[in-house]
Figure 1 (cartoon, helix red, strand yellow):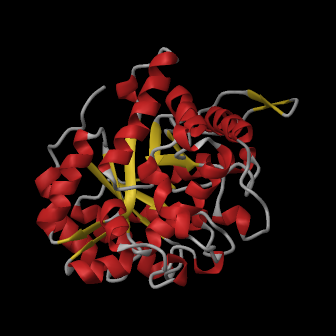
Figure 2 (tube, helix red, strand yellow):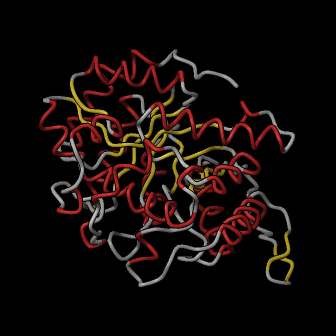
Length: 336
């Protein structure tokens, strides 16, 4: 199993770089940044600094969207970052949640998301492509391959992921839900004539090693965040098209304040029970984390992306590097 981490770009530049260096030394192979430019710092300058501070770690957005930056702008930024990093950039992209909603705008369409993936990937990799009636090409790009990860839970997003993406970004730590998501992605890949095993699977969720009650309190914000996406799905799809384990818990949800997005202790999470925290997040002692991660690998997960935004971040990186990553380094995901 591979390991990544995601941080909100809310720390000082110095601390962000220090955590990144520490994480690479601890065995994390991926470093990701949220992209919500009003709530937090813009990720792209920080990714450049993270690239200069590391040697092997792959870096990317978790996640950007087609609308914050016009796709050719995103492509140009990633192409430059590939030059800075020696080709170590990945693109994580979705429809846009907080980055759009804090502007009073809805997430973008699946059609726009698919188009953006094709345009960004082609331009970064040095190929010409037509965009909005004009042929575009970045003649200066180094042409490094750009792995694309698509974030989403809904049937349409999962089918798109299986059809065109290199990886699935799944914001959840519940093995039963991950199995359902993975089956949708792999079925779509097979229908498109692709090898389902070539689509990587990421489970992204907060993790906190230590006292169980403390860990629950620190990560309770996450199911509330996931609930935003779930509510969108419930409003769009018949309930029978979605797993009950995903939809049932949002029935008591009263609203969401994006000014307290992904925030420890946020009142957004008042409806989230301990049972839901235990399903969606990884909490408890190292042995509990290892057991859950083995189960996630059995569900098809290649990479666990630790949402490192629950306090004591440096301590958690150290604990994962000492106790958890070594125990799972040789664990392979279940194949299709």
